[in-house]
Length: 181
Image: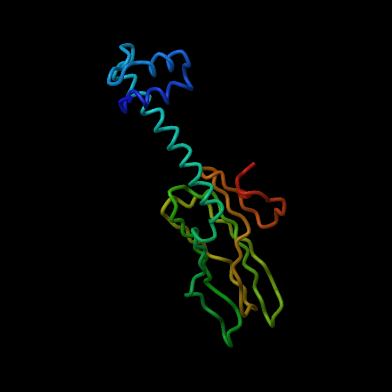
C-alpha cells in the first residue's frame, strides 16, 4: 500500500519522467525519494491547480458563449415619450446590462420604427465597453412619424470571452458556434 503523497507523485511524474515513475513507485510505503523537496512538491501542486483552473475557465467561457441570450440583458426604456395622438417616438433609450465577470467590447442593436404596420426607418445603435458587472445606456434617435418600434440585438463581441455573435453569420455550427475564429 502506498501513502497518499507517494501515490500522487507516481501519478504526476508518469507524464514528466518515466524513469522517476518506476523508482518512486517501487519505493516502500511511507518512504519518499530524497530528491523530492517540499518546495518542488508544492510547485507541482500549484502547476496542476493552474492547469485545472485554466480548463475550467475555458469551459465556463464556452458556457457563457452558448447561453449569452439568457445572461446579457438588453432593455428598452419605458420612459420614452410619444407625440400628439401617439405619433412619434422621443427620448427612447436602450440599455445593455452585463452581469458577467468579463467586459463586453461592443453590442450593436437595430431599432426599426413602424407606422401603420410598415417599417418607416431603422437605426443602428452601438454600445461600447460594457464593463463586467456593469451597464451602458444610449439614446436612440427620435422619429416623429413612428407609432411603435422594436429592439433587435445584431452583434455582440467580447475579446475576453473570445465571443463573436453576428446574427447575419449563418456559418456558425458545432458545439461552440460563437467562439471567435
